[in-house]
Image (cartoon, rainbow, N blue to C red; front, side, top):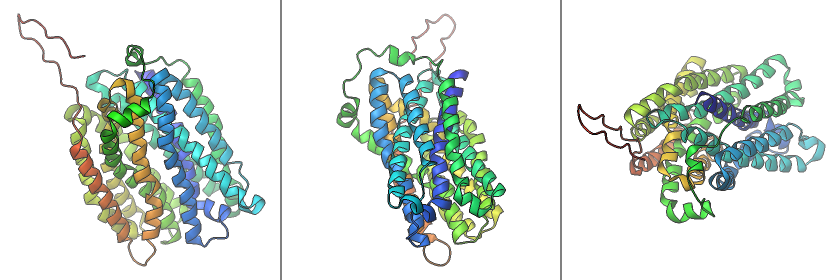
Length: 428
């Protein structure tokens, strides 16, 4: 389990590094470099538009790689998805700017961002299922929380590299070539991740499954469509909060509040570091009290915290902004620490890779793709951006309603027989 968890964590960390480094670049430099004919606001919106394309591609990646995972095994998915995302990320760092090749530059950016999202859409399902289907039932949330720590590590790595380059280079150097270096580094990270995964075994549940479903996506659409929509709606608030903190707030604070770029990155990095460190603790609570209760508590806390978070962000003071971000991320991780066990348990093994991954990544479209664009548009006036808080509160209420309609899946502990009693058979 330690080897499996480490390989899953490393893979998701690398994949999300690739995904997040684009978001940071979109907030800081892609607007003027690839959309120079736009105003500053329109350029940022356009850059976030290419950022959102990656989310639109993720459900398609889930369907494509979910088909492979349900028919041929979870293990092949982990190799193919990491290779695709790594190559696309390196290529982003090689795209010439608008000044060099004109409209072809943002067009190439759009295609490569789509391929990034396609690969990431498959990565989560393969990594999580490889861990979940090996893990003992009473500690399934804990073991599956390791791939959920991967996004935090990927985010810290991506933004840490950008922060170091920002501190070590002048603005002219950073805009000329410095922003490309994190994308080039993705190639080495992907190669290391592939080497780490070579010794992984296929999951017992897949080996014992019997004849695979011929068309898993069709089976999910026919028999599990309501479950997919509920899980997508439930997860949308997590994505919305995470990308509000990690992507939109970076652009808003640096452009509108005049906060130094390095200061803002440190605030966000510190928040995500605490979130990643507390993920196993939230997972232990999920094993103890159940998946659905943790999600309901986290979602309720998110709804209640959105207006205070925006008020603290509007101060422009690093400590107050950190406090606002931290409250939001603690609510977020209360939900997402248990999701990697919760979603697979909701689906039967023969369509699990497709169903769980499609629901997870559709939530990314609803919450992650639209939020930076909507928040940028809603924050146009003077004063605190209360429209952003109202938008996030509305998404949170939608998610809360979906969580209420989902069932609990925590395995029932097998009762220990008393003295002289015949032991009961454990459930399959």
